[in-house]
Image (cartoon, rainbow, N blue to C red):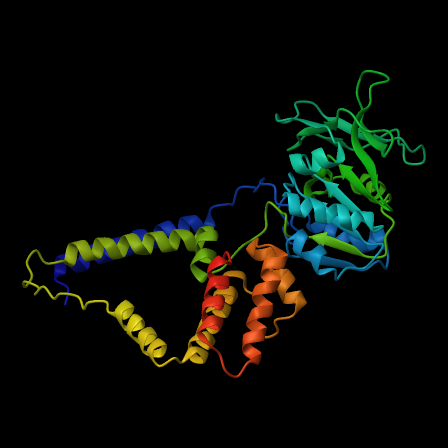
Length: 395
């Protein structure tokens, strides 16, 4: 039971906690100007409005969200031909594998649309792009236009809020076509911001003003410009990238969700602080001496060695091989999240890609495991060879 003094402390603390929570609840939320570009975000720099308007722009063309890594999506090959992969973010950074996969996708006759301030040096070097960005927010309003006379307008939307100006300094005119530009006060000076790069039977469309597609500008008279930019896309299917997004939510646990929400986060911190103070006030200065109990010795290694020696002495090679294969398959499942039910050519290819081992080396190991599974009796040479191959395989 709490004494009178302790009860008063708890009551005062509870009242203070309720007052803080009430003030946090009624305080107006500041506008969130962080770049997000996700289809679900309704903040100024989210893409909710654009995503909802895509069916209006593209008619009956199917639109599908892709929540997986572009490399995995393209390698799986479950995409429609003559389709468009739609990337929208403040910056897009791709590794070498992703770039190779995107180039393969385009060379098959598909289109990739990218609107961002930066595309990463690997993609830029691969395609000979030379974008430059002024990493200072615009001090003056700028407007854009198109080289196509059908799209040109006397009055184009103007941009300033949250915009970093990115232009293409130089292009390869053999494979690249200029589509749009920033208007400048100087005549005969085109600051390119929209280009098309042909690769094989397809093409990349690079646009450097992703802010034009955000909720903030789409709700301020920018619908026509966005529609004209996207009118260069001729496709039978659209894949909207939801993976390479600045605002992509990754919630893997309830606690992570609690900490991501401001009211819940404050409640959690204040509750933990209150519990800590309560413990400090209620803890006794004296306590009984706690007897030191020595922890039990870990004998799991000795036990495992004893069991292994027992199998080996009885020449039970089949049992040892079965357990080694089972253990190795469990390593593959836990490290690479691959199903080991069917050890076929598709499994070998995925394992080689994910583990970084040579395909030939991987195939020899899996083929040998299948060979051992098919035998009813095994000898010492089989066990030694299996142990050597699994030890040499990099996990």
